[in-house]
Image (cartoon, rainbow, N blue to C red; front, top):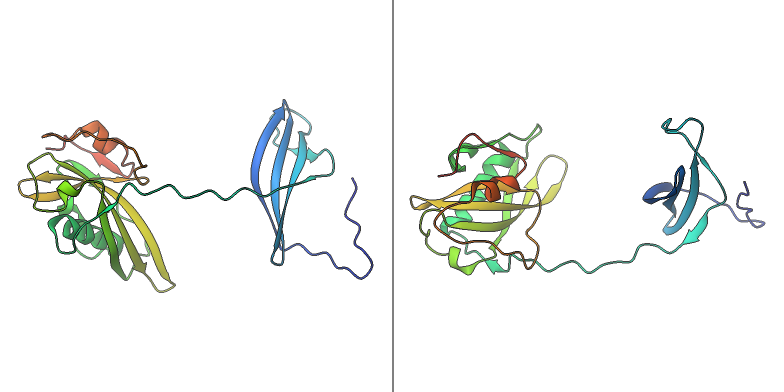
Length: 225
């Protein structure tokens, strides 16, 4: 295979190579795009690969010299569905903040903030030393005031800065919270933010499958009442 031929006096160096994309072209033939960093410069190359030896062995060989390709295009971040700030000190903001502080630091009882039947495994050590809540927002202005009737669901995004011995870590949590007996409770910790345009049902009862299904870390031992 042909290799780069440096010009007289030039010195080629590679700091890092990372595979960023792969596509199967046919049985046993693949194209893998790699990012090659040299100092401040990053180039992208598509490398043709073919399976080597017995099928399923996991071995590949480079079939030809790579092709220089353009880098991935930057995309505009989608708008946030959580456009309603929740006032500091409100029942919704206080419950979300206190729950995440207990969950991330291990100080306090996180389970008392959970809806009945909901379980959340603790974080692995090490925990954070402290948590600073930067913003609490929701997708529905109707839930930022007094606690509504039982079964009302609020979807909340909480931005925090968790501090440990090594760094300040910016973290974002999406919570589904349900109202019960004049207080808010955590129904699930969602795996990602709610996309713009997502609709939800509002009513007197929490849909157990909808509330707990997206919150992978949570396991229900019984229905959310």
